[in-house]
Length: 205
Image 1: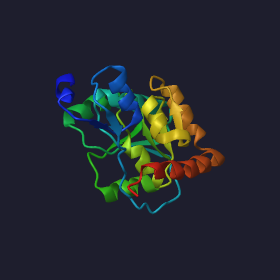
Image 2: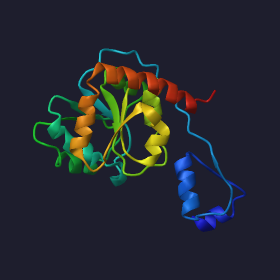
Image 3: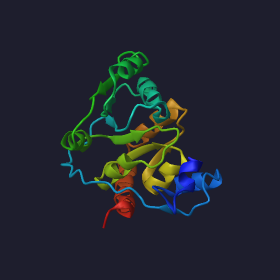
Image 4: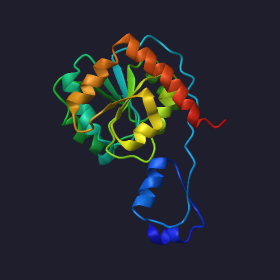
């Protein structure tokens, strides 16, 4: 990384968090500029929320999907919808870790229209990443009025701001507690309102 970045006139990254990482670790002495990712519109046709939590992201180890799956033992009335593409080997590996009788659905990849449909009646979009460079699904959900429940890491505080419910990414119990906290109408309504405001910081216009 240092050799590659040394040849650059300037460096562009997607968040202040990643900029700080580059600077703190002295990866380059070149100027670092932040240009945020911008979400596309999903144009969700909202329906009454069901006890359904949605994950959109890869299944790399740092994404910590195992914690989401383990937490379903504490949320027997909820369904966990895992939307992204996944290899048969990785899916089998995660299924073996699933609690007995847990409601877990692997979609194997979805179109934008299918993504919008699943989100339309969801309880929340969730992510348990241990580290991350940005978090585009968080903004996609917030701008559409879907609450987000995020792991308590710096980048998600930058992206979600006051509109996120944050949990310890090493605690299935803490995650489950946040899912249930969102059952309170006042909490949900407030986060939806804050999320729409926060998402505007990342639009193309």
